[in-house]
Length: 196
Image (cartoon, rainbow, N blue to C red):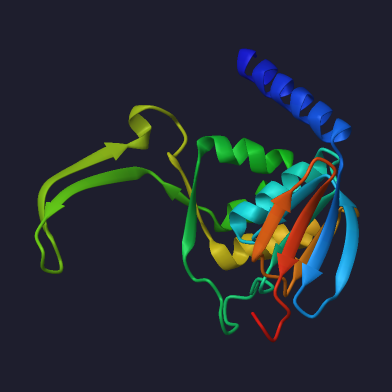
């Protein structure tokens, strides 16, 4: 209960700051194309962290503009698909449930029941293990330490959810080369596609 109260206070203070310091974004590209946007939150990068942050802010009612040079690949067999996984610890489950994401991700989430720490040495590959220690999730909880989720699936689920928010705009094909914060605006510079 106390932890919930801390999160509420932080969110309340953050919301007050955002509402009283709403920024105008001036977007510049090297081909002299200038655009003006009024947004609360600007996020550079639409990987798993950037998309989760964008969804989180949008779900709280903030206007969000998230940019990335490339649209995420969301099918496992498509060229450029990210076949790695991202590990999410236990608190991430309730966070993703609050955003309405966990139901689609859970069937593909691989539980992390064992955490192995290896102390290794050596300048040749593979290094030689000196000490190996396993930790079992069952020693501390009925739940696993967390879950591994395939990145391509995570991005697809996040993109599908992002399309449900009218206050969240995804700007693909935009690279952040610089930005300058001012009291009344944020100046964002992106190279034109031919310069990127």
